[in-house]
Length: 301
Image (cartoon, rainbow, N blue to C red; front, side, top):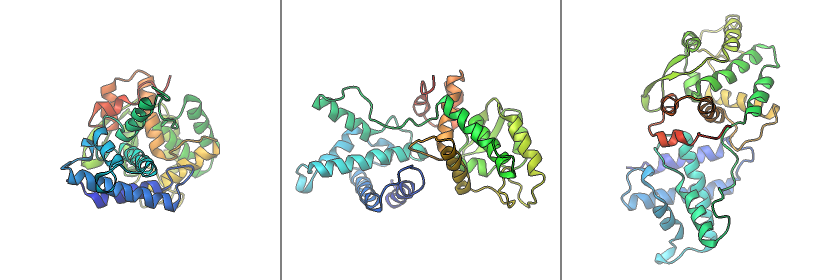
């Protein structure tokens, strides 16, 4: 059974948060949140127990149906479609309610374009969800420019995410002892749903983490966390987000998403571009469905 209130609140937090370079207005957030809530109620009424079961047929039915069973006005249809397209982006990015075989709202948009004879076969205009090779180089260069405690930590962090593809919460939960396993190219982590997985990778940025370990030893702290703030506290996901966004801004990199999840997406594409087996990337990312992992194929040449 779908927890309508919790899912809607999660979506609203996501769309209200610092996930977008151009933030949505309060009015848009309110309207989109209301439409997502109604869509979830619609699924529940239709007997759908999991959001991942929502097909393009169900999305079309919700979008098109107006009051008293008639056809909804075009403006209403557009708002609903826009809200749901973003909603399924949210679900795919959080990976909590999948597995998904695609975004049914965006599939509906493409289907409508096809029927109208316009832009046939052309993908919906969206910023790519990963960094290009030159973006990665610029970001790592920017991260390594500061020789302060924070600068050395930030350089290690960026390299660490590119190497491991871990989620922000997983990175912040790592103990100091995890560094030893990173250097071995094997990290065992507890991910979403308390699921344990073994992440295998090549520690290409080991020198940066070693520099941070040496620097970390000079930070007064009671925390056992691998990554610390300047004050010696364990790094929080909020602080990690701000670090990544600040570095992206300084590097002049503009993407729709601006946080650690963008780097996680990039890690998956980077592995595949370098020849890692798709099944291993699936395990590293913690995806329950290999179809989710396959979306990263060919994003990097």
